[in-house]
Length: 289
Image (cartoon, rainbow, N blue to C red; front, side, top):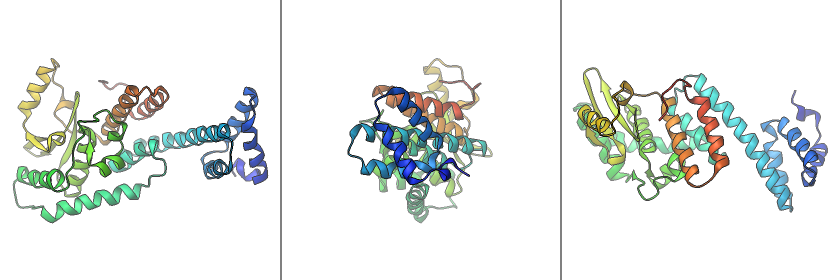
C-alpha cells in the first residue's frame, strides 16, 4: 500500500497549500513529505498547478514534479542498463524524457518505422554491402533530407531523438543512432564506433568491415582513415576506435554531448543532473574522454 492511499484529496490539498509558506524549515518538511509520496502523485501536482494563481507555488510544484520525474528516469535508466541495454531506441527515449517527460516510446518507434519503410522500398539484398549502404545513404540523406546540424552543433536538441527526427538535423552520434536503428531493422550488421571527438558507424560481418560517417552524408571509408585520424590526434590506437561499441556506450555518448550543451548554456543544475545519469550507465573503470 502506498502512503498516498492513506491520504485523502483534502489532506493532499492541505499539504500543497503549505507550499505557500516562506518558512524554510516548514517548506523543506512539506517538500520532503510530497516527494516521499512517489511518482504517482505527479498528475495530482499538475492538477494543483493548473488551479493555482500563485507563481511561487507554481514554481515550487514545477520543481517537485521535475524532481519526481528525474527520480523515475534514473530508476528506468538503471533498469535498462541492468537488462543489458538491448533496445537502443528505449535508451534514446529515456534520454529524451529528461527534457520531454510526456514523450511516448511508441511515438519515436512509429517515426523510425516510417524511415525504415522508405528504405525498405528501395533496398536490395542481392548486392554488395557497400551498395546496400549507398542505397540507405540515398534514402536517409537525399530523399528524407537528414543532415548535420552545423549551425547549432552544441544545441541540446541534437541529443533529443524527437527533435532530430522532427528537424532532420543532428550531431554525429544522433545521426548514427537513427542510421543504425534503420540499418539493423534491414538486417544489416551496422553498429556504432566510439572515436574521440567523432562518432561513426561500422559495417562488420566476417572478413568484411568498413566504416560510415553519418555526419558526412554516409561517407564510406576504410580502417586506414581511422589510423590517420587517430595519428593526427596524437593518440595511441585502441580497439574501441575500430570495433562496434555497445548500446549503453552510445547512450553515454549522447548524455555526454547533452551535458556539454548545457554547460555551454550555463545550466549548471542540468549539467549535474546529466552527470548523475552518466554515472548510472558508465563503467567506472572505462577510459573517459
